[in-house]
Length: 271
Image 1 (tube, one colour):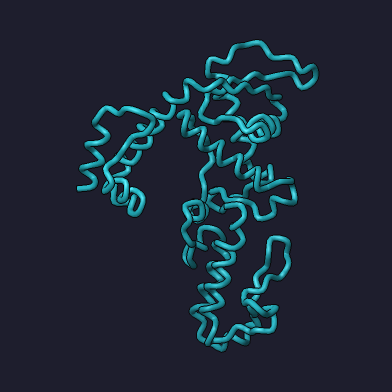
Image 2 (cartoon, rainbow, N blue to C red):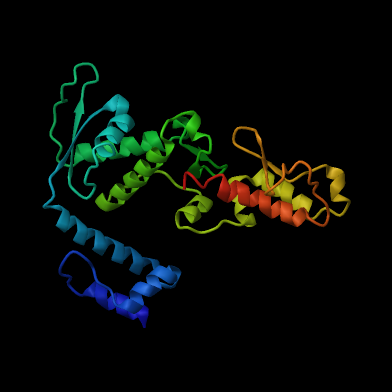
């Protein structure tokens, strides 16, 4: 019934700033979105974006002057430091890094699209230091990003807005994110079996430990994880972790604590 309500709402012309849904359909989308066919959810998103874009036409145009060699830095300064209105139209001008003079050409939408694609290409490249990639070349935040950049939280917030603006404007950007990272963005808690998409080798080792038939204490493991800096991180509160050996009785607890650290605790700030 709720899905039928959603379908009827999408077929009706909408007035005002929001695409209103019946309470039952709205509740279903929030609590059990997978029950609604993807096509219906995508249609709702497009409809709500269209309503918001029509409302944004009255907002002042946001003007961006950026250097091709410093797209990320100039975009960050212009949009985050000046508290820009992201739903407004963006007008992009490329300027010379030597003279500061604008390049020839008018932004009829093409320059903005080029800027946005190049910005995403730079920021989501693992060599830039903000993201790492799995063996499947799926992206997730780099726990060591602070080594390469200051104000990492601001940078990740900016990239979230970049992705949102791309969706808002119908621009396709290339990054493909790892499932465990997407789960964190949605507020979900990753579990042990999600580890195989982050670190297949570690997952395989833990599987072997889980199925080990001998005396686990002979393997000389303890309740510590190796952090991004190579430092030892205790997995048990109130102890160093090193003084608690992994045994047959507690190896399952160790496995799940270690996977929780890798999938949730280590990614908490960036997500």
